[in-house]
Image (cartoon, rainbow, N blue to C red):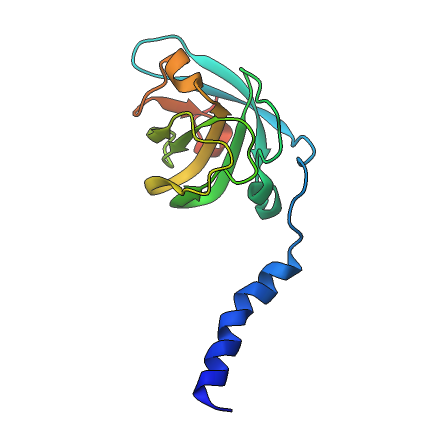
Length: 159
């Protein structure tokens, strides 16, 4: 085989791999929920009951195709270890606040009111243990800030 043929074949490989994974066409069933609390800078603690996206297939679909996120709800993506988190809003119909959380539970960065259906990458700007998706505008409304602490069992700081 010549080099040009091998390069063309290699370029098709990602397309073949993606074709094996079905494209989501609707929202995933509600995931198991757990309590999560955000505390910080002298204000009140905010308690949420969040869906736990622990498996890769759950994380790929996330909040896609959902028409609302409860004010006291959301979805926590547990990456299992600290790593860069890159999210997008493909097939996501409502704005979200994305809260990127360090391994110790402190908030590293917040992307507020992300744009529905956007393919723009929303980056954690460094390694994080988890990403929390809340209803768009929740961070501003509740005065959630970088440096606040997220208390949840995955961070080892929940009561």
